[in-house]
Image 1 (tube, rainbow, N blue to C red):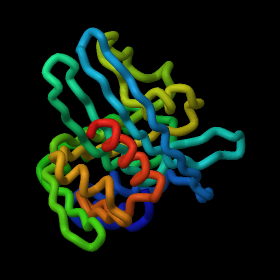
Image 2 (image 1 turned 90 degrees about the vertical axis):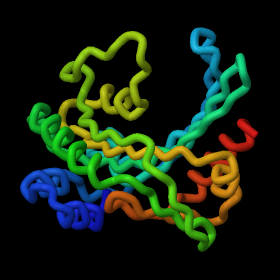
Image 3 (image 1 turned 180 degrees about the vertical axis):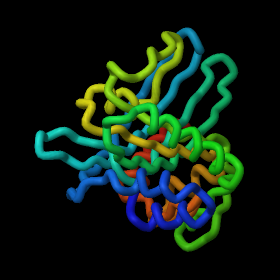
Image 4 (image 1 turned 45 degrees about the vertical axis):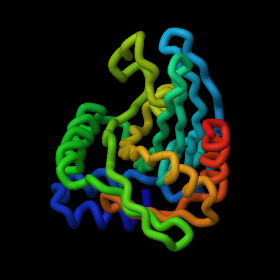
Length: 225
């Protein structure tokens, strides 16, 4: 998350001290980015999925890669029984906080969840210069720390891959992650997959999809098409 996002969220009524706490924790480091595309089949749920997960990280002096910044991921799911399909995009903003107070980070996440749920209802995209508005289908603000301090996960629920990554890191930092999902229909998904440029503006978060993110989305679309 960059400084622009910190200023924008402060303007929509979030308690200033909480915003400053979130914005002050990011180290000055050159970010690294990668996209991981994977497939999965669940015999229990009778589904096949393909996901393009996007991660931006900064590396500390000890070589640890900490999630930080804006990313866009894509996912498609097909039900084996009836052949029905669904897909989503996840716009994610990851911010580093000091690691010494996990409970305060949980409180901050809950506070941001409340005000964002009331105000964040649409994603405004520009696809090759053409406007595309997508309704927000899901929003979550979560604080992730090392595995030993986090609540025991439910055994029948797969955690967010970001939680799994942060869980393997030392307790020096906490990642505050804002995750906004939209569900484009098939025609909109095709439009996004064939785009040369996708810009977005939602909930005070603005950015442009990286070429690797667009390519990951394209792979997901072609798999589901």
